[in-house]
Amino acid sequence: MMIPVSHLTDYLREQGLKLDLADVQVAALTLKAVLDADKPDPSANLFRYPVPRLSDDGACSLVDELAPEPFDLAPLFGGETLEARTLLASLNALVHSTQHQIGADWLGIYVRAGEGEAKRLVKLAYQGLPSRAEFPLTEAFAEGSNNSRVGLTGWGVLIDDVAVWRAEGGGYYECDPKVRSEVCLPVVDAAGRVLGIIDAESATPAFFTPEKQAWLTALAVVLAHPFGTLPWLTLDDEDEAGV
Image (tube, rainbow, N blue to C red):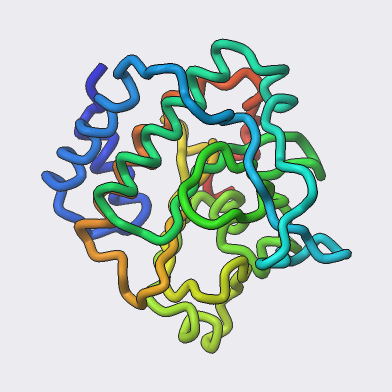
């Protein structure tokens, strides 16, 4: 099924992204084909991945120290089902394909999960250094985390220079101190409700050119369909982007 051009233009307008529509269309068509293609059985266990230890208050990652146990996605899916394996294989293929095009130092996909105070973003697939698996979707945590802020508001963030951003009062959750630029975009459904986010980082300032942003935008749009089919992702009217 093709992604209507109106979906792309609506996303660009709502996110205030001034990108070449043709670039976004080509990227979206490519990634949609990746999503729809049959995948071989993955050689790695996609349900578990290493994560850094967190500080005692859970606010910060200890970048150079891994937790003794990997994070396990299986409970989120109700077990290592065939459907879950298929989805994770597709999400990892999307991350790999997008990363091949943009060459970022880190790229990850997060989905919303939980209700009430347990609402959070859960990392489903990524390429790069190990990083925390979950970001609380609370106003308190969002004060220092772009991931949580985008997950709460549905408004994307483009940071050309992290040092300048922080000096000007922007909140920033530092997992890797080498990161100098970042793009964080929401994954939204047709009603504008936030289903998850994507996050990309680079050690180079102003790394994310419009051409690279086009691929990240396409990734966010393409993810809306598989995210929208997840059984635990029940969203009420208060979850609509911007509310």
